[in-house]
Length: 259
Image (cartoon, rainbow, N blue to C red; front, side, top):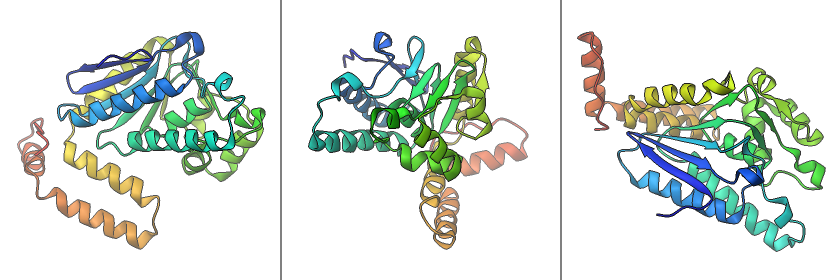
């Protein structure tokens, strides 16, 4: 399948999507979003893929939506655009496999919202993150108002969204927006190391853990406990559980097959 706005690669058990509009700071145009959707669907259908990495080319992860194309947008068009972005980012969030955002530079507006839809965020020390939509007379429309408070708390999310200020990678680390900050020249190697580690884990248990964590954030404690209990017991129907425990007792590395 041909892509013009992204680069989609598969290496072993890892799929990699590179947003590839460097001259536009990887702005999330409708065409790019459509290609992102197709790549997500491709990775989901490939049972060999166990991890996905998303990054950007040039000096940005993504500077957000294409503002030039939004100036004359009608309210109806704005609603449709918001719904489409939500749908694609939810597809990403709901993947059974872990998704890593390799934040190589600016992650602003929709770019920050894209990173928030990923499971793990690794940032270059030169990265800047933020939700500057307020400076354009609008609010985040692709999940920023929902996911950001869950990630960093209401107070900090209010500050970031209402001021529209950018924050450095180090501040993002301090508030829990990113998992790790590394030198620019170490980003790719660090992300690859994490991706390979995740790819070695039992796929069914990874899928269940992701589901329980995500759903657990949306329900009360009692419902969350029930969800975890069901998923925990389901692990004991898998061959990977037998292999993992047997390998532990035999003091060797387990070989998980997703069965």
